Length: 100
Image (cartoon, rainbow, N blue to C red; front, side, top):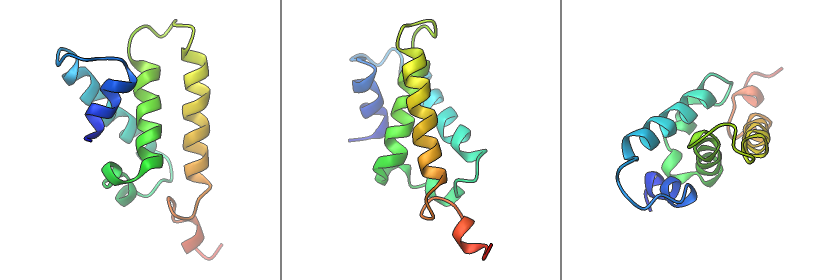
């Protein structure tokens, strides 16, 4: 299943009316993770990495609809935690390669 389809399912969207907006959010989520120390090459294979996919889906759920929604704070905390966990792993960062 393509990531867009997973995001649409998580956002409870069944039509194609929001596809452009959701694709923009997917790209924004990847860009947001890209401004951290997450390796760029990890983000290019997001379609096969379940942890990156889950973070993208959470980001999209957080930003789709109204941000004053009761779930925004919970989803924001979840996304921030997911991103932090990715940043603590040598698989997703170059920190272990620096010899520091």
